Length: 443
Image 1 (tube, one colour):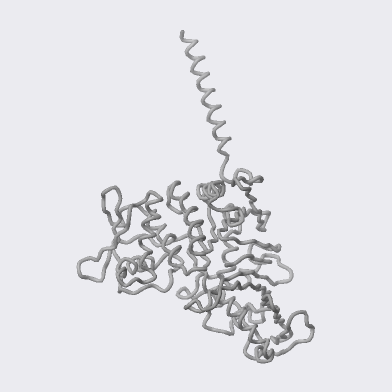
Image 2 (cartoon, rainbow, N blue to C red; image 1 turned 135 degrees about the vertical axis):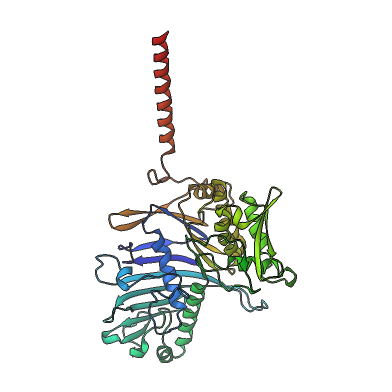
């Protein structure tokens, strides 16, 4: 899991920002405040690490079939007025290595740090200006010199172990083969750090705020999806695979049961039932509730929009990081509240990390209640409020005590409930007084 995120000169985050990340991290804030940019920094590194071109330094996107996000050009990522014209992305991570599949080795905690500074070359492409990869045992640094040459250094050394164009880093996270060869035995550890970073990035699963509307039926070729796309596409394939592979005892066999359980807790449905349409390759999803069975297309859009959220919570591998934008869309208040329970319970049971951007007061309030009920702790959940200070984003940590109370809450972010009640009472009394006065005049 990711334990810390650092940004500087990245989009709305011109000033350096450091974010502690927990099992469940919730980002609240005004529209266009910079919440999504915090999430996008990790997505940018994820799609860079997955790039088929190992020589790329930063994959800013553009390939809709392979990339999670299109960032545009270097200038679109760099904060306005940034000096120097460079930006930084860094993170700390901690992952659990369970050893061999047979459990022959004891579990051991692996932790490390990544920090990269990016500039722009003469072709206006993003290039690494400096890179630092750190483990408990060693730190490796790669520094860009003149004309695209790089120096490779270890720890606090001032003399490079290798230098030249062939030492250019790969996909931001790895040293080149020439650099590793020049490091000798130390190159093996450098490779291990890069591999650990890559695995952490690969285990990011992302679901965006815009999801596909439901269809009356779907074509399914009886395959299991490898990933769920950012718009929720392939979620029905996952549900079909789960429902029709029960006898095979696959890893997906219980997903549809878990989804049905949580839909029931939300008061949205009792269970889901995938049904084959005749003998065709088309299948429909039937929603059962209050003794009525209806096609997914006929039960309102809320269920279809939350299906990817629920399915992804159980589809993502153990130890994964799930990034969600507005998981609550089209849900009524009770269902929004239950989402908080989903995140807390799944993060504990499956060791899945959730990083969530939301506008839901109900989700936030239920998290407070769960802390008060001691079903989670303030150390396992972290909440932040993001606002704008002029053109720049600003981060405020919302500190919770053991009862889920926040001492310094941003003024009126969730509206002014007490103020609205006072205003309603004032208007009611004024109206009653006028009615009494009018009645006295006519008496």
